[in-house]
Image 1 (cartoon, protein in one colour):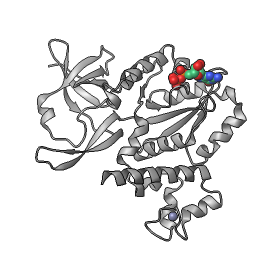
Image 2 (cartoon, helix red, strand yellow):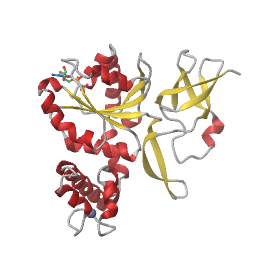
Image 3 (spheres, protein in one colour):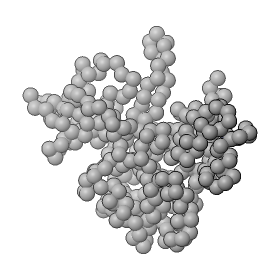
Image 4 (cartoon, helix red, strand yellow):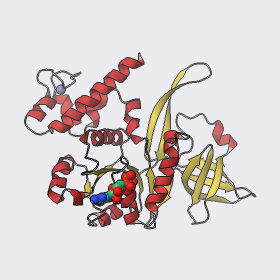
Length: 315
Ligand code: GDP
Ligand code: ZN
């Protein structure tokens, strides 16, 4: 019996494509029967999982075991079993990502801090390192670009300034992706494909094809593919990432996922402070004296309100 270890790079309708560590051809695999019976509160196998595969005579594989995940980009869904018992079940979009890279353009389309702050909440919820890529710096010049993103560096998020036109930051972006599994997110038009092409010829097109197939709704956000980089590592494009936060986020925990706001909360006078109007609120005090930027505070307020409305609809 031949067994190989490898990485799941694609999942589609119960079939998993495994890239073996020995560099051989990808193996289309299914989950071994007995493994399937183990009741799970999470997806048994997801893109990004490390697995062992038994090779069948016909060239297909059978997944024997899955290594423990060190991280995941996921969401929880409440499901009912046959006895109508409600259970929380985790849906994994990407297992074991090393980082998420949020791509924005400084102009055309305009930078949207609200959208970035929402992305960052998703990264924090999933305990994933977030990197910001500020593209098209050639359109506004380096100073204006830095003025938009300085604040994010100040609160600890690395920012890579790039331009496909001037070549600024392409090398830095390449080094950031090297050898890692990176999840990429960003609205269409910000230059994701162009950046990926600048890093590796043809890469942008490959990623675009995958995300377009996803966008058609057939597989919605569940269809993810890891695209290999020549320099080592993989990128995954996940069009669905923006909606992730909305599923799991309680209004009362929004503050915890704004990394500069979270540590202040324990200093508010009221333990259930919403940081909107309460007296002796440490968060509003920090906004007043400039330790928390008004834009980030505004993002916090909006996201909290949205989650509040969502929760009211649930009941
Ligand atoms: P995607 O939808 O995020 O993949 O964006 P594309 O890579 O298709 O780029 C959208 C448009 O922005 C195209 O017309 C690109 O030529 C342009 N573009 C991409 N990167 C840059 C850049 O750094 N500077 C400028 N000026 N234009 C860019
Ligand atoms: Zn407060």
